[in-house]
View 1: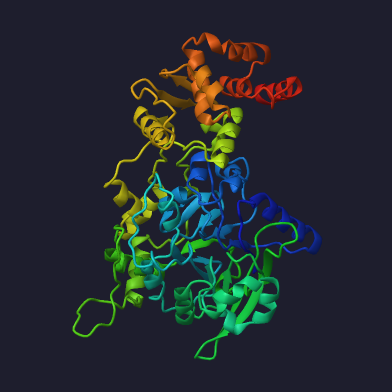
View 2: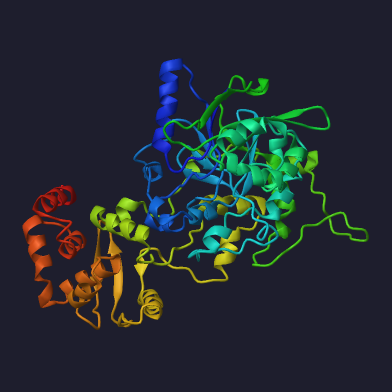
Length: 525
């Protein structure tokens, strides 16, 4: 069985699939499965983009939304874990794993699945010691802190993985297991990554708990990303077995981001087409440790072998428990591809093209915060929880906190954002919180309400056209501001949508006659 392993995806699905197609054409090797080692970036829309922890200059939709919308279909079954640059709000819907798009499967916070008879395990996120003992408390809309803490590995997932007692063929993590550098050519690594030296020497390069998992599970292969380097090691175990470790780079020209390995398919599955299926041992572990969920921003401890304690700490599954899982699933362990359902909008339906580009530009400049992002309950998670008697962490968190529809710019939200800006910039006057309501329709935006000061006056004093400015221009247009007749003229001359015309009106230097004509053709075709 040919398995392609890719390092950090960073949203470059098109390029990765094109590379696989080239390999098949040139070398006759057709891949059965693609595994991505994190930073997958499954952004469906601009709201997902706002939940991703990356520097503003790197914000980009990339190509996943095309696979989510159905415009494209993944040509090879794709399995991935989360890294530290993800659409965390979307992945949070699928705590236990699930389809994020047709033929693309997320493994969850931690998990094990079967593919063609191979057991593949994985752990999402990266290690940060200050969050390791905490519960899963994050919920959209994220703060800048929770946008990052949500992808920090928790002790619960490591504890569950260490309950596995049956052999695992492949394991995937985003950051490297601490100490793996003891078992490879570290001097070669330092030649092209010299700044790794201090972290290697202080045992801070990677996740120390990942090495514990490796020593417990002893998988045949372990793949990682995160460090943007291709590097290999061979880790020995006490029983004489070894784990072949391979880290890969990110998907960019000239980078060593892809490796194809040929793993013998178990004899029992030789005559069937490989497909994903649930792992009954893993589901049994989830059932038996369901009571260990915590949802507070505070430290909690997993059960352990403490003298005098009667709390159970060993959840290794018996044959009877595994058979019970099979019974609960009706004897069918296959992960049904048709169970995928879109829960959030794709970006074409959330915004018109012109306005979408404006919002992306402003997110990059960090001039304007997006509205609150909703938390969607995913039907795949609901179904699995009902069958297995599991808690849906997202549903639990949602029951304790209010959430918002991502298409709503409510008066309260606008008021809150403007008030925050006023505190930072005292010269800016407050927006009338009772009058401003912004909403989005399919294809383009619309605005109703008014501001305390004519929008055109604010534009003259503030200069650069931010998303807030554009909304105010549109606002003034719809309320008959006589100073904004230029927006009407641009719309009349070019048939541009209102949002794009407002952008053009604010920055004449950028949009000369030729640029306006080109933009008009682009937005009206």
